[in-house]
Image: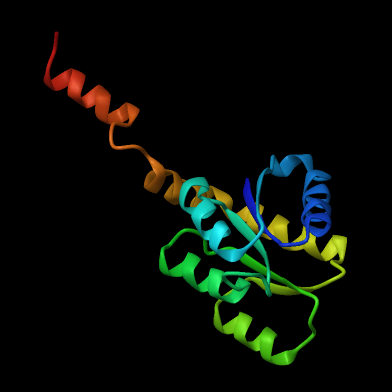
Length: 151
């Protein structure tokens, strides 16, 4: 599973990664971004299955990131992480169609439960993402070209 962690506090980002790595069956490939804008750029090339993002970051907030990811159809599985138990933030997160809104300090079991739900849903989602990520000359296209132009 490809996971993008957008968090401006390195200690927290590393802690989240460490929690995810405790579940070997997830086979997590993890990338990091220090702000929302960098996370959006990373998502365009990495095609994450899940994005975990802080709600307040420089250049682009986690809410803005979630909206941009959905608009560009880069990732629909977004979990907002926040140090603020502000109802308005939570409401805005739900309106942005995020999976959940976790408060810091992150509850390890709550995070793993959410990630497991995403992981279990991946066979269908992964096929769609893989098709979108195929290069123009995929293996199948090259095989068709060989059949059309023998030699």
